[in-house]
Length: 479
Image (cartoon, rainbow, N blue to C red; front, side, top):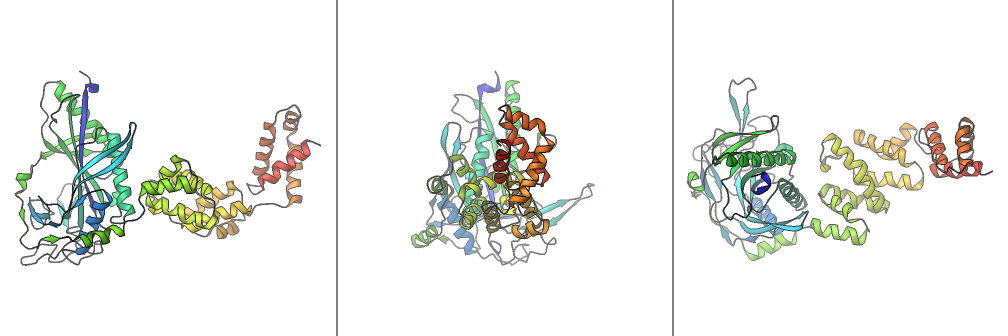
């Protein structure tokens, strides 16, 4: 049999750090970074006698995430102790939620090659993050940093509804977009505030029973997740084709070798010996609280996309890209308010800005200039103060210096030449230097005008008004 005879089954457990100012059970700050063990106290260090107090904002953010993903919200839920030993888990147990999560039975809708598909969400629950082990590069040992211990998380558990690495990427991008829109997490994957445990199994097409799954832990890169799923699925198929049995285990993905390696046997729920957290009270959620939180939900990506198509007359593709990230969408809206030219704003974001972000591997939220500055740049182009080609140079400078475009233009002497006399001199000079192009035009080759305009733009270092150049060349050539 070939791999085409098998179906991949994937479920995800996504961990997202919440953007609260303080930790889930104490008042220590949650900000990323800081010297090791400076953002911790007796509670998050698990000192004897230190008792947790639940952060209300964590509950509110979890409810908000549940409402945005079509979940049912529990009227009552509780915290539980999840027991396991790891060096960066100070208590040797994690306060999480077991049988009564705060949110359940939701879904996220994604786009696939076969149309829309709903990915079921089993649950969303709250829990605390563990600390972090810093391993010595030379194998001399590891040091524990507890700054992250107690940072609030929501864990979003999907049903095993995903059938390819591409669907997983689409689902994760959609989930990331939702969490950013509702502003409960900054979703900075490079800082670990959005990461996924990926469960993969394979079965023969048409089979009803799931295969034995493996789990790849704490993955925080879309590219790595796609590669890891494809590799692990092929590995499992190879094992089965050779008559072997897939082992239920936790794996580590190595991005350099492009392979998975066994870490330990995969735990089941009973291995964690859950029991209710005795130091925390039952969480009660009233209908009034739930509705107050629902009122704070913003316009979600789908609604914005529909509005961009109807209100701004943008193509569906443009609207999809612009609303995929809240930072891009906000920049588009605010820049459009400044310049009143939505199509131009869309074009600049879709081509120049996204191209720059991709080349530098940056996220939209890391753009150093404001939407108002982008709008001002487009106003200067629309007024003819600078050309589009100079506009690209200005934008590159804005990425470096984050100055007002007008200041950059003045500092570099990039104001567009629109003086008829000055442009006429350039036109005559280019015509005299290119007699063959003149002859080509006279012979009916209209493309020669474009070449001459290009030469004139080079001569003026992109500062000449291209419309005036085109008009004057035609006037001279048709005399």
